Length: 130
Image (tube, rainbow, N blue to C red; front, side, top):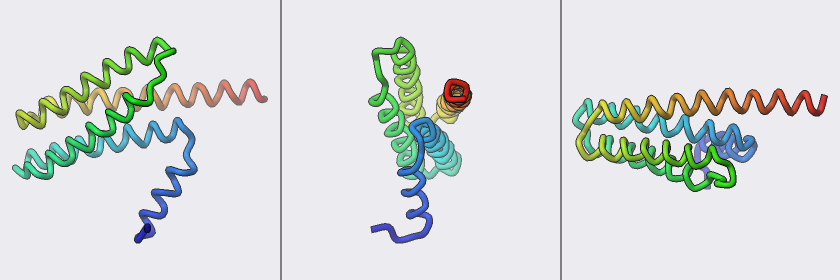
């Protein structure tokens, strides 16, 4: 049962989002969790960093599991997700802010690319339906 208005809003936004919006939400979450993990490292709060690195890794696993390999780009995305996940694991094991920041850089770039691609797809749909 959802207890807070925020939880209800969050569930509603997930249920009413397009697939492109859901992917953006996943990227946003992975970036947010990785940044929170860095905060934990900087404050020597290893429990906080470990928990949040794990959440970011879970999101990357989800992104990897939803790829459709009939498209060539999926193979490349899988490799990039796999490497980014590796960076997060290394950041967690070695308490490395640099590796975590490198992972965030890839996630931010992927998010921006996805945003541009979804805008392009939406405009193509409008033209086709226009």
